[in-house]
Length: 130
Image (cartoon, rainbow, N blue to C red; front, top):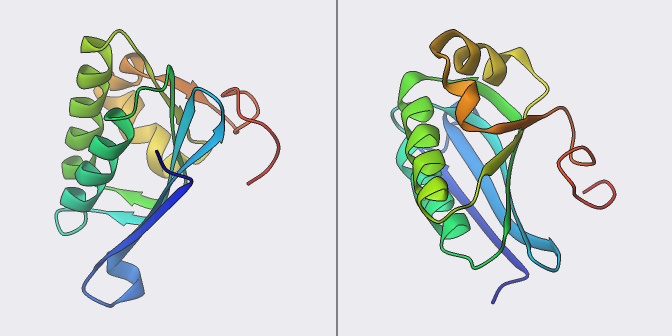
């Protein structure tokens, strides 16, 4: 069980790091909050954080990507793998993504259909602001 699991990776350069925080904001709900750039350097960290999210028994899985400033194909591949893993456990990964930097790569590749996309945390079923 966890309340908050923070994690950071990168080379020390703020432009090449991501922060992830895994919380349980409500019973049966796990939330992964991601901030920073997701590229080939940081995608493995995102993958590990998503594994932690998917390893929970929670029925509702949410990844808040509103703090993501760049999503490279390597990060997109990690998200796709997570969506498939969630599907295998009969769950759907909800993404909070209001910005073009995340929504556009998903839409262009047609992979937006793998997720429940939400503009904000409230529409994803989460209580109040973080």
